[in-house]
Amino acid sequence: MNHEAMSSSAPVLLLAYLTLAAPSPASADDKGHFEHRAPSVCERTADTLFKACLFGLGDELETTLANCANISDANERSGCIEEARGSRRDEIQSCREVREARGSACELLGENRYDPDPLLDPTIAFIDPDDVPDIYPPNPYLSLAAGRTYVLGAGDEGDETDVVHVTDESREILGVSCRVVVDVEFEVEDENGVVEYEALEVTDDWFAQDEIGNVYYCGELSRNFEDGVLRDLEGSFEAGRDFAKAGELIRAFPAAGEAHRQEFALGEAEDIVQYLDLATAPSEEEGGDNARFACHPNRCLKTLEFEPSEPEATEFKYYLPGTGFVLAVDMEDGEFTGEREELLCVGDSLDVLEEDDCQIADPQALRAALCQVAPETFCD
Image 1 (cartoon, rainbow, N blue to C red):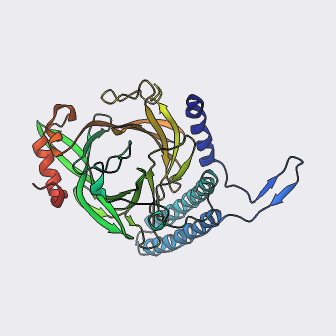
Image 2: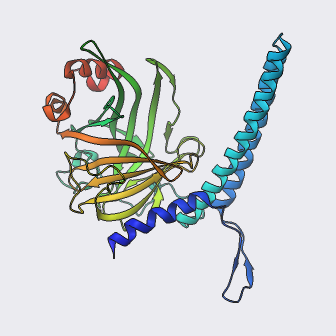
Image 3: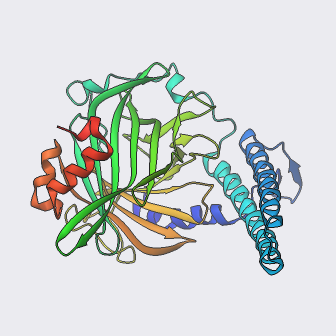
């Protein structure tokens, strides 16, 4: 297979999927005759969620109008009503765009009904996470070996630090032992030499592996912070609860061009990944290589990850075999935003935080912040 051709064409095709209208239940043959077909369950699901989106906007509008009615000042009250109605028009268009993106995702995946849950598939042989990598081969792009710690940096001035730590804990979900991986994202502030780490998101991810090396996403508990205060648990899901199902996070032996769901919790978690190229490197347009973990010459797996509920945002990711994730490049409406996340360092324990390669301004302050937001994992 021509990797270079796949790398250049697949992004264009997928971006087209995300911007075109949903697939029609009618298709034409070579003579122009149309053959009607029933929409797939996947397409019908997209339609049903579109209706739910509209119904939700109606409830939200009426609630806002009720609040507007309780404003005494006539001009302010009128402005409140007009703003509410204008916002609803914009949100209706957003519902349409999400509907189109979900329909296009159905076409990309070639999916009818997403069932059964992979964790309940009797053909998949899941393993004990403690047997990785001693007995079973690890996934070349993601290690579930206890103690493995990754430090990533993002932001225009490196003002975000992300610590990902594979714990020695597991939890059983739908009868499968899933490794607990804790991911903490911080905003870094340096005022007069005093470094502070303020939590943005603290996530307990639950991953499982089969005997081939494929890694599955069993769910997550996501705690979102604002100004140091816990605001919500948006994005959380668990396979087997509230109709949520697991997905494949990343395959051990992907094929270029194929795509699959990473998670399935409608309206909450719908990430999809497409494997674009098995052996490539970031382009100059994407900002070039990660200097610490270089993909050149053509050593990295490149993926495109997106969520239909946010069709304007996509992300290219690069994985270096034997190391794992090394670079993410953000896109919006098909254009590179310039925002990147890079792997800074990786080690077999939290001691890696003390190493110079991690570029942590104050390792002790970072450890204290980790202990505060996830004590069971990071406090001694």
